[in-house]
Length: 400
Image 1: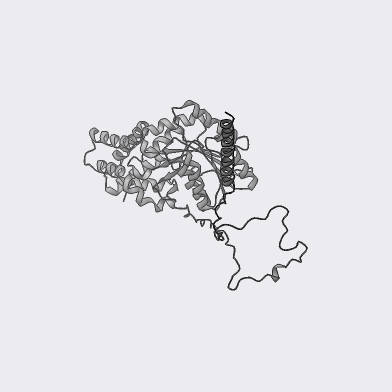
Image 2 (image 1 turned 45 degrees about the horizontal axis):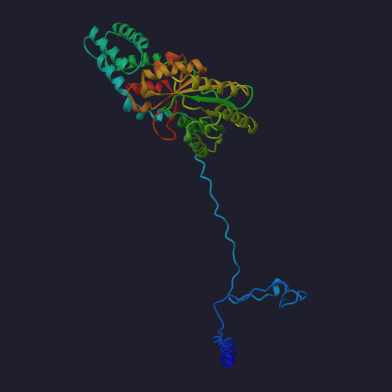
């Protein structure tokens, strides 16, 4: 029994000793050798850490810029100057004296249908009632208006009866006299831009959308510059996005100064500032372009009256020009009436007069408002706005 116990103890001791040897042999197993290290030429150099000494002592004498050698062939760097934007050259507008006479041929091409029609009718051998009715219809079709037409026909009938013989030259002279009387040669058609008290003269331009109001304002600036005046343009049409840009472009062409405000801003404020600038700079004329008002919109028309009142806080208006499209005929007269109720119209500008045979609108609108046509637009050119001259206009109506 003792022998068995002894044998078990010896076996346990031997087993423990063998386990210890195995464990110690595992712990002492050598690690595999590290791979040979090669310098990495792509890696960036190590950055210095705080506390590392600089390679060059701080107290080393520094070199001046003259002592530093530049690489051979290196040229000094030249700084490029920003490109200069040249202002567009200022144009010299065509003189206004006799401008309508020079444009007479263009006007007569579309207007002399009235004169030719009347001369043809008056040249008939027998002027019966039916012929005189045709003459009335011709005048009404040309937008002369009912009352002026009746007056003209009555005078023609009387003079033809007294005249007796009717040669072509006699008829032409007779018709010219009567048409000239109807147009009104004695009316003052001067665009008043020279106030008696002090500069500047103030002109407000009004009219509905589509009549060419902003373009007319720009062309009027050219007319004034051609006559030796200095001009400030007030872009008070703040509701149409392109209106201020368009007006400023017109001004830049002839050297006029433009005052404008933010889009959708107060038109009266812009007009006020334009007059103020004109007075401070000593300019001759201030032209104020207002927004194109629909004559059916009462609120907008009231605002136009506000612009007028605000401007007159600086000085009284010298001119209020109403721009009308000659092609609109009787509808233009309706517009004229409404504008005349809001602001005191002092003159009329008829645009697109070259594109219609209805030259009688000159007579009708003057009779309606009691104010003269002062300017007429005869085309799309920059200098196609002309002072209205009754003689030249009637001659264009009758033709050669």
